[in-house]
Image 1 (tube, rainbow, N blue to C red):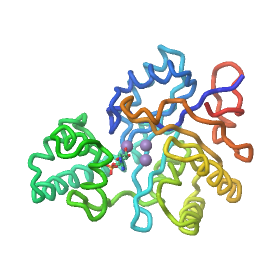
Image 2 (image 1 turned 90 degrees about the vertical axis):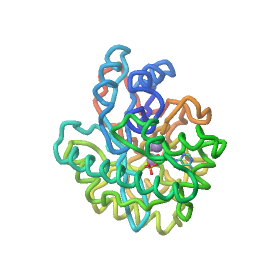
Image 3 (image 1 turned 30 degrees about the horizontal axis):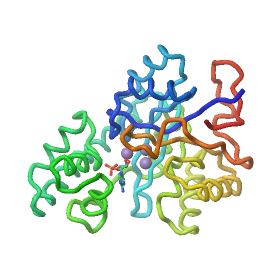
Image 4 (image 1 turned 180 degrees about the horizontal axis):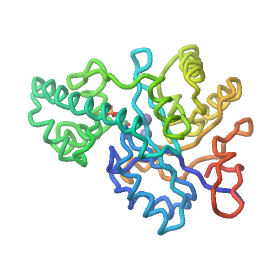
Length: 289
Ligand code: AMP
Ligand code: MN
Ligand code: MN
Ligand code: MN
C-alpha cells in the first residue's frame, strides 16, 4: 500500500479560493492522505484545517510558505510540521504581512497613475482582510475587465518593469530557515525550477540553503515539468537534500493543478517524510500520490 502526500497547498487564509475546511474535504475526496496547508506568510488557516482533517480522517501537516529575498530575487521556503504557536515564527510572519500591506498600497498608487483606480480596496475585497497578495490584485483587475485572465494581469501589470510592480523586501533565507526550525519544522525550497535561475545560480541558492541548515527541495511540484522532476531530483541527490512533493493548489478554477495529482518521486530521491510518524496503517514512501 502506498500513501498519497500533497505537501503544498493554499486556502483563503492567503491567495487560495477555498476555505481551509473546503480545501481539506477536496483533498480527502481526491485521495490525499497527508496534506500540508502552506499559506503564504500566515498560519491563520491551520486550526480550521486541522479540525476538518479530523472529521475526514486525513493527516494535516501544519505548514507555511515564507516569502524570502535572496540575491535580490524572491524565493519561497515552505515550512512543514511547524508549531503555529511559536512566537518567533509568528512575529516574523507578522512583519511580512505588514510589508504586504505597505506594498499593496504602493502597488495601488502605481496602478492609479496607470489609470486603474481603487485597486487597494478592490484587492482587499478579494482577500480575507489579513493577508494581501498580488493574486488578489489580479482577481480585481480581471473582475474590472481590465485584462481577461490572471496570468495576463501578472504579465502586463504585476511583474518587474510593469506599472503595478513594487519590489519585494521579504525575509532573509537565514531568517526563514531559523523561524521554521525554531518552530520544530523542516525547511523546503518551494518549486525551485520556477525561479528561472541559471544552473549555477540555483546551485548557489541550494548551497546557501544547506549552509543555513535547510532540509529539502520540492522535486515534484504542480509547476514543474517532467524534465524538472529529474533535474531537481539530481540536484537533491548530489547535494544530500531530501525531496518533497506538493501540488501548490490554489483554486479549482485552475484545471492544470489538482490536489494529490502528483507523480512518484524519482527513485534516487530520499523522501522528506521517510521518518515521519504518520498514524494510519502501513504508510510507505513508494509513491508521492
Ligand atoms: P505575492 O506573494 O503577493 O507576490 O504573490 C505571489 C503569488 O502570485 C504566487 O504565489 C502565485 O500564486 C501568484 N502568481 C505569481 N506569478 C503568477 C503568474 N504569472 N500567473 C498567475 N499567478 C501568479
Ligand atoms: Mn500563491
Ligand atoms: Mn510559491
Ligand atoms: Mn505556493
